[in-house]
Image 1 (cartoon, rainbow, N blue to C red):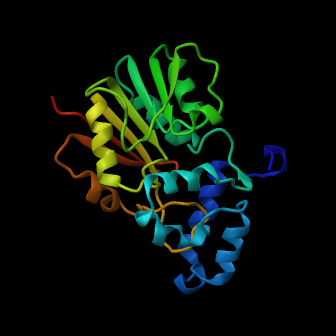
Image 2: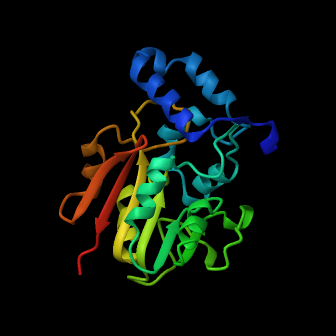
Length: 240
């Protein structure tokens, strides 16, 4: 389905709709066949029913899981980025140093925004060849899986990952991988969302409260955690 034939909904509007549905619909209705049918119809045909993903995701091989995402085509277009203006500003302000890795960079919107400030930026994604590589000369594009990054230890001053960790099969291992390649700081953005079996997105991890995220990240490293534009913005300094 072409982008022109998709329904255009801004990220801010999408967050408001999801928040209203998650907060005010009773759980029995929220996970009902009615909502499941609406979710199913919001995607093109998939190898795995979108409503069954959460129960199957942790049993799939990496290739099977990657294949699901390569076939994922939403009928809702949120534009070039999942970041709201407020969360984007928070990421940009938190970056330190001259070298940045944008993990799971998607279409490259954030990587190009960071490169516009004169930094050396690497954009990495499992499907970077299928996406728009961008036009910024200072951005290097490469294929990489967030759970096994092909970079040496402490390779980048700042490592950024936005709207990615809610999707990964192995969350703690992925977080450790971000830390491994970061010399000074990691920046993570995840959505504030309640866990339900049926959701309008293929998330398998959910962070409705501060402690929902801290249960995974821990508190032993210097960090801040704030709500920016409906998303959690986590900034962690690496210990030297």
